[in-house]
Length: 151
Image (cartoon, rainbow, N blue to C red):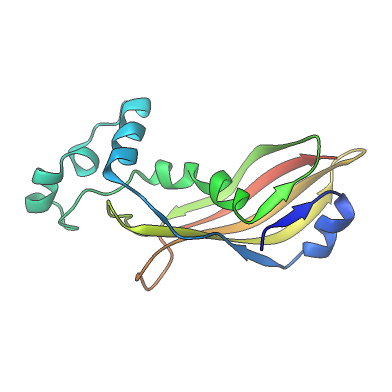
């Protein structure tokens, strides 16, 4: 069930709590759109025929930054923030641990590690974020993600 966060008190009570998104498929079409937007057209991402014969994964794979860019969407499947705004504040750590093959299913797991006051009605949120591929033994992405929430 999706939780609604409407106050700093609610956030404080979530410290140490993990939430998990639903599974979603990473399609070749989405990978191609990301390649177009970022002008990163490496064959490992966009050429399924070449990837089938030359890639160690035997298929195309999503850009690491594409997977990273899905974090806000994956978190929004778990939580709704009922506040003035929530901004990305940066990352303290990002690791691209493994590939996200085209057509695979991914999901995000987010643990709220810290909530620090950042002025009246605001807080900096520190999330441990992981993205998993269905069937993989370990996460494909791990990050310490910072957000600024304004209530």
